Image (cartoon, rainbow, N blue to C red; front, top):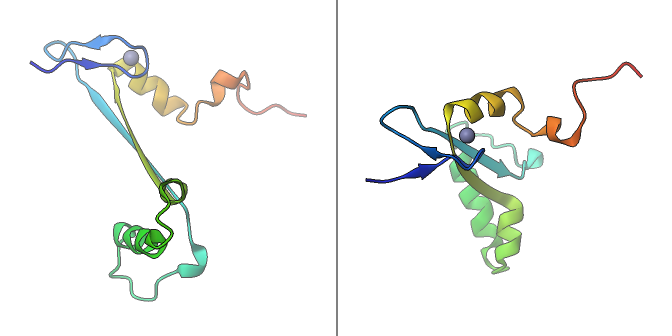
Length: 100
Ligand SMILES: [Zn+2]
């Protein structure tokens, strides 16, 4: 049996009692100037093209600059917390927007 641990609270997720949620975050550079003229091309294809173009540089760091994908397993509680605050802004002590 596969065991999952919540990446939010480090708690083991008991799949017999609760749901496991997967968060996938894709961060990629937006090349606005490269706006494709044919709408058939999807984002993945564009990213592949960009990575191919960078291939000659043979630079792993450079590829990470262009495209990164992160995956998290979350329990139900952490899923709610994540959706309320996807960018983790509360953890910096800034709650909401102030009036000044
Ligand atoms: Zn959790």
